[in-house]
Image (cartoon, rainbow, N blue to C red; front, side):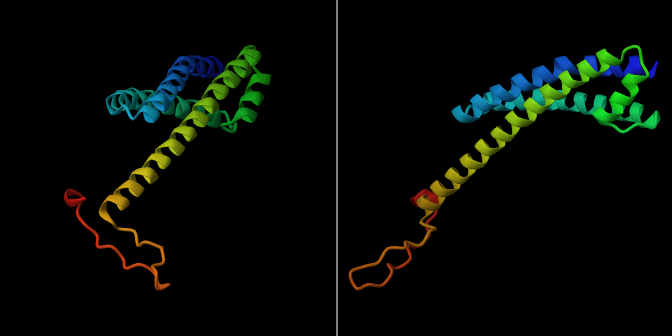
Length: 155
């Protein structure tokens, strides 16, 4: 009975995991294009999928823990050995894990893109406000005087 419930939870998460993967890929394109409207729409849909996947993940962990098994592939393998659904459980579990691993990789790439954009924006603001001291030498061999910071409205 527990094996059937676990299999159903896994089956129910495969489609949302694929949807999440596609959203993360679309997010990557939107990040590079700085399309904020699209990013907001993606974020709203992405959050609902993540909540659903987390809830099902907790239920799967509870089922395995209730059987005295670990909430990982090892626990699933032990359950599969004692179930007539064993091969299907492992196959679908591996499929879900593979999609979620892809989601994690794309999400990490999106995080790096966000960090790069934040650094570029911070650098542009620093240049506009004159907040960075020049590291150049003048004709007398001393460093140039530090420019005054100015508000963006005067840049």
